[in-house]
Image (tube, rainbow, N blue to C red; front, side):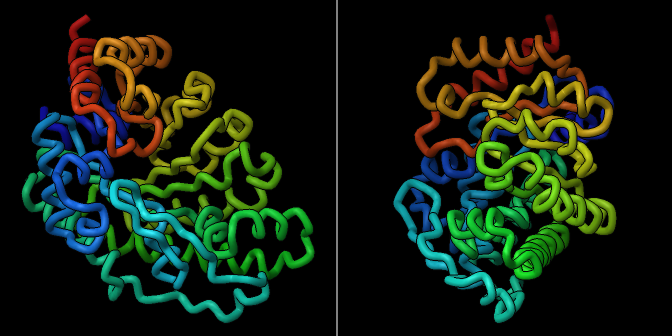
Length: 343
């Protein structure tokens, strides 16, 4: 059974021959390649080479393409700071006032150089691997998190708390979701097997469960409807941090899988999603930088013992891995998955 089939079976609640493994290690892969971060972000061939080289070296079952979380914000005009060994970061929003949302125009992402690099990398990986591994290309930020970047996270939280411009808030979230869904459509055309969004700003660490239900959940549902149901592209949602307080409603999105942070009570989430939404995670990213391979294998086995990973589960990091993550620790994840199958 190859990596593609193994991952697909897990996502479809069928039983693979062992636990599949897909680390979220785009930044690590770029670092190992010797290319610069910005160099890869503007050159799809180099990005593909970096990701393929790491996969070939460590032998995991799939590649997740998504080295940063600013690509859509930058495409709309936000200022972005490029760093040598870390992903670029948004440094200035484009909306100084919420009523400026009326001036926003949805750009044609197919003409954006950075978007084209991600899509070119996806196509190159698909062509090179010929169905042997599972390829996920992230469609960057979900509606709530992209809106937070476009407005400024602090300013957007104040807008929500004040509640004085609900129509403008909705317009901003609608705009952000249209951009995210457009990107997903291009990813579908590139041949990727699945896509995903990062929606860190809508977690319970930043907003209440009630705000999540009002301002994030409807847009996540719409994204699932458009991307997963209409485009037929499996879709995942990643929310950073502790998500326990929204475990009663997060599964209502009907997403194919969730990427689970190591801070989250994955046992609780597993009970709410079993047989419906597969889980993807959730090894501590700090451990992958600083622990030994033996400690990583112990962490993996403790996770396996808690959640019954025989189906509906892909072993991964709890979030995007740092550039300085250890190669031997990713290999230890692979070894743990293989050894668990024959216990």
